[in-house]
View 1 (tube, one colour):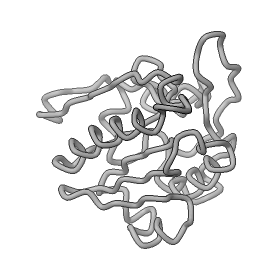
View 2 (spheres, rainbow, N blue to C red):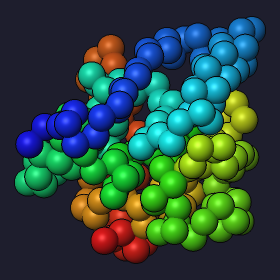
View 3 (cartoon, helix red, strand yellow):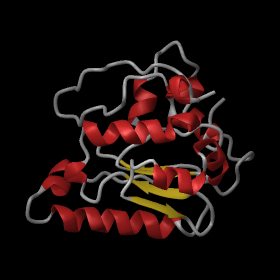
Length: 188
């Protein structure tokens, strides 16, 4: 089954494609990041988003995690067009900025536990439901050492399963996932 608009009227999937070089530029990178952050937050704060993120990995709207899950997992775990139906049951991925829907917050221990995790420089409740999680103030500081705590903080809301270690294809951004099964940290 793919995304069924009659079961979820009013759903909208937005995507943008920031250039890695624009985020990393020493002179203008922070300004470019700020533009993307402000645009996404302004929208997310007005709706109850099922998922959102800012990641420089892009594959037709799929998250890095959806690309990395084993091919033995069901389509709903691997493809955006299927995962949309379950985005309030499982978090689709995690990255520099991750928007968690309101329905998944209890599995993560709520806003205060996310703040106490130390994984984020920003934990901002959204006015219409859900929470905005930002790992570092500057994308240029979002390295593997910062990614690990993000994974650990959101793992209970992820679909269980061990991601595959996929090579980076020439000319693409790296697939940034933690190679651990989220079930180790409470995913069900």
